[in-house]
Image 1 (tube, rainbow, N blue to C red):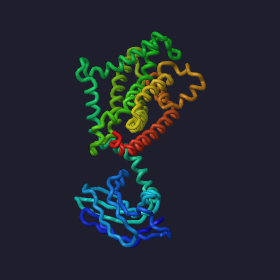
Image 2: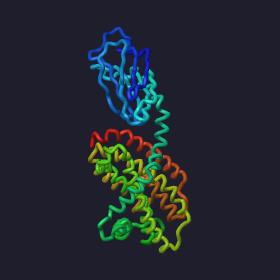
Image 3: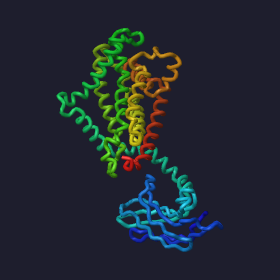
Image 4: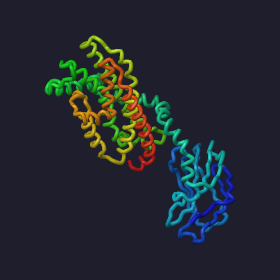
Length: 398
């Protein structure tokens, strides 16, 4: 059964949109049981459903419909569509419906334009805008909320060790103690060595260089699945950008890495009496590291709302990833087949590139760096799109 909208006229009246049109039956079959006309309001920017009106029983013919819009200024899409007991909303079945594109300013409808379209046609027309939003919005989020993000990071670091004897000093002591623990296990107990340098100091340097990118990545990813659930009070506050919670975890991890890097450089200066000039290339590694970590955190934060066991699964996967990546042992220890496969890992690329610029006084492999950049960008944009798509249902689940 198909109904057509004809002789459409739309007029704004205060906060209402008044529509006059004729609904015509285009098939020979009778009107379906429960046939009626209804309308729904959506936010065209996010696609979020806002509200639904009463259903109007009708058998076609001329109709006058008055639709009240929200008082908040903004852009709104009103879908006026038939529905029935068997098919539900006709627009969801890709039948034509009446779309009203309205703008509300200062508690009044400033403009309203009506057209007959289909959901498929509307989505195809909206692709350029969605693509533009997908590419720009993640970076716009970072810039627009930069002061909030900086405040969250400061509060996170201060709150982490508040009340302890060491206070903020633990920001340095925590990564130092963790590194010393791994050094004792692998460097002294297991006597692992790297390449042609059989000394313990050589092992320490190579090990710590590999730990530098791993610590912030694993810390942020491990916390990501519970970030939304643990801050459920923010979810129902529509003005709070909850995507910044993941950004907070990633940047806090980078701050910890910064202190660990200072410890590493001090150790490097003492043992080798020099700091390589290729250290200046480190920002080229920090950018894809940040993009990759944030994209993964957005995906896990969104999934963590629905899969409450995800935190335990991620903890196990991080442990596996750590031991599959040559952080605490040399790359030469890997079998050739495993090396070919594991070298495709972005974590492997980061570890290898860190060691190149910090210890080997050479730039990272450009092909590997380009692949890391490309993969990190894909994960970053995909993570933001995935989080943005699911965020509208967080309040219902939590």
